[in-house]
Length: 121
Length: 380
Image (cartoon, rainbow over all chains, first blue to last red; front, side, top):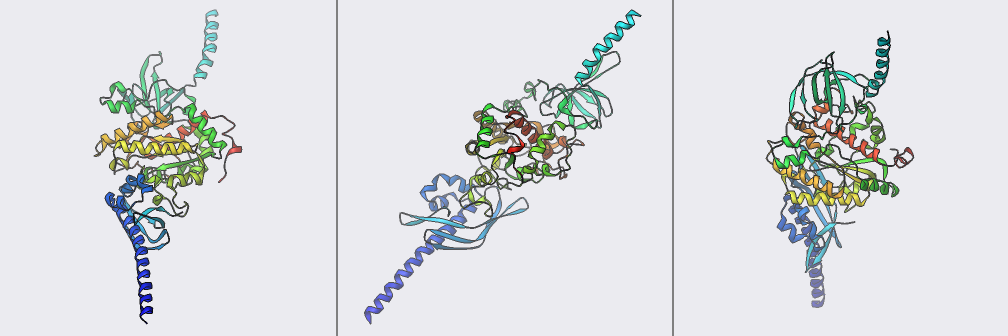
């Protein structure tokens, strides 16, 4: 009885940890997208994988020419090293709204932390 | 009697030479400034009043300025100078292409006070096509690029439906620019296609950012630039950035990004045609815009790619060809190609279209005929 309880506790802990890891990767992508529309260079630098370090300036200025950038209906889910996001970014240029549908993104682990690593092919 | 015969003989001798010169007598429909040369940096020497008949003698390369003269019956010159060609009442079949091209430069830089503006004015409005670009074109066609396909890359000034896409309408009117007809016909179907690399708010940074690519047409991780080149396989890319970029980056970074853009375009054996951009002197970033344009000039020179000096040509237009926001080029409101009623001298977008077709004409003239043939053309 005690053994069964112990096993169940172990399974629960492992599942929780796994879910927590998945949540973490999805959260990284959500944080990355938020930092990108805000042009938050420091945050982008923290969340960007080393492979794409050279694109940091581009990423930080991506939405500089538009105003009021926001993410609508954001919901991300991890599947392995891919995080798929629903929703879209909406930004305004002059009086025109521009939409940027969200898609699937690659994530990698570096030093135990998930990093955003571009669009998934 | 012998004297009369000699006189008649002289008339017969002189007659063909006048015909060869193809002198045309025309008048303008509004009073316009008369300058010493083909541009507003030359001294203005007077005015040409509406209805006054003058002879057209020669033109600038673009065809946007013409040298006119008026002589009295005794042969004395009453009026001599350069005017914008947009305001003439032309005979139906008249072609600016029939006029000889003047050797005068597009600007008299001695009359420009600022050194950087003088540098910018010294660049011709329409470039010569380098041998290097002829080779790029040839390699591109051999690799599968379509000789009659062009595309546009840039921000809202390029995305504008009135820019280039109006070329696809069948009811175009080139006015006196008849010599551009074959070029319009050659590219017009391709010009009608929108570009995924010309978008509102696009900058030299985000043209490489997959997030700005159209997911319906582009592959995952593909930039708008590479997506557009893959979709169209053009032989020429018309590229204009600056009006947005100038507000968000230094000229050094702009230079870096534009070089990447040119290199990527050349790597795909596509001729990148760069444009300087018009900017209003009262705008906050005026001097930065001059620096950006000078960077474009240097890049064009370094890579031997053609550069259209729209900035210089637009100086002669009201508000420099710009709309009330002083950023975007002014639309004419006509959704077909129309170079009549002086539109190219009043609306920035009409001038942009004219200079684009003019540089495409130059590219076609410079390439071997067998490449630029209907057999290699693409149907849409």
